[in-house]
Length: 435
View (cartoon, rainbow, N blue to C red):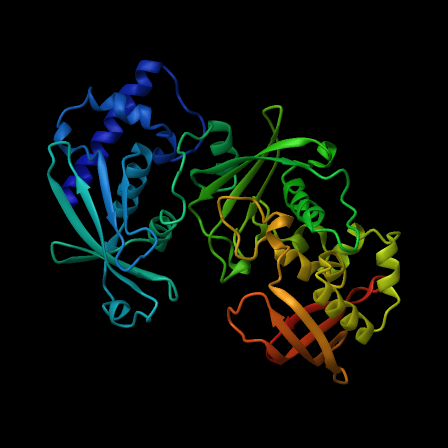
């Protein structure tokens, strides 16, 4: 199998050189061989000019053991095959066998990659990887190899991204490549209308906060898109090979976001997708690195302090905010529910359980809180858990629309309040089932 990999990669190099010479073009950018071979069209055209075509691998079959969602995946895209082969070629012999025996219960074992030649011949390797400890290995003809963990993240993402588009523009590749990001493929193309302004009113869905945050990241590399507020833009989402920087651990998967207006790139930043999308600039800087401010200081510039609801809530004591929150939950008053939250807590709605094909959750996806009734019965005295943070135990009678994780009845909830902004007063920063 190793010889097959070497022949394949040598053949790929020769054919690319032939194709490039025929076009009489020389790429001046320092982009990898895999990144140059962007289009499946190029791979297909050059096959006919090469010798030893039986060494070309036109198809890879991926079999994921115990995956109820996507058990079998067939890969025929030329660039994706090249990328997989290149990552395998970079594997090293597994020297520490304890990495195998010490895999956690979350390890995904007995998976298969089947390489299919043009003559129908097949070569199979098995592999296993542990998402908890981020280790993995592959086995072929009794040899155990250890690829970089980015290989396993690449394979795992194929379960989710069912329509990858490897036909990526060179200017996009070069933009991310300038900051040492490798674009694997495009995930999706969307149209989004930017808000008219970035001043967030109490009770609004946090779309303005999303754009305000990510404009800071984009502006770091010289792409300030505030001049396009109120306009419809094209949004492109890309899968990036490299993990997020260390300060974002345990989050790892990076998505490259590009904004375009009239086909001009007007913005670009990195996000982390589902559950907590806010990440970093292309040059791997955090919001604090860029602005010199923590969230609480930064968000002050994006709150509409003239808003009527903002003024009303800013004057309330902590227990009043709690009563207002559960009153809104009981009446299904979503806007007031959101108004009682800190902006940071509210912004979690953007990415919680999000489909990674999209940029963020839309407001209509977050309207149903599965509550018929939520009658507040009792509020304990507040406990200061740390400076500026209060915790209250509350008893609430819940009547759920649908029984999912809890039955109807009286439940204890723990409510965290803080002053995210001194001028905004106390807001709810979290509601949980345990202290």
